[in-house]
Image 1 (cartoon, rainbow, N blue to C red):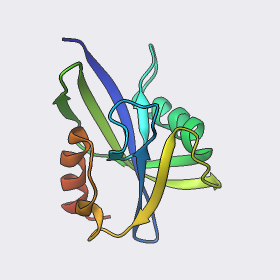
Image 2 (cartoon, rainbow, N blue to C red):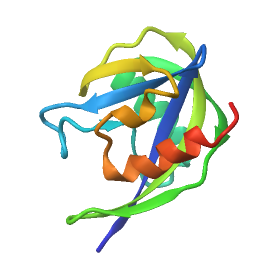
Image 3 (cartoon, rainbow, N blue to C red):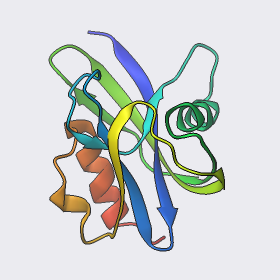
Image 4 (cartoon, rainbow, N blue to C red):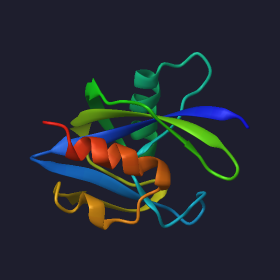
Length: 130
């Protein structure tokens, strides 16, 4: 089975975290995730996350630091999720692919129906000093 690299951003603002819900046309629609996407050929995880967040949410971010990558195997694909902590440097959120987005507190993070690959990232965030 093929493994693909996917970068995701844990975007933090005033102690809250941006979470996004996958839209109707996406695989595993309705599940919640930290926004991001697949890395393209010859693209670093940082280049990928900056591009994906601009495409999906119309904002520019700055990576603060990287968290530990997570591998997860779905029935059809294995992904290596490369998460970062980030902050917005410009723009106003406009969702282009997701059906919803929310700013949530750390306490609220575990109350969402997350994509399985994102659950270990949520646990890392809960155990990280920001």
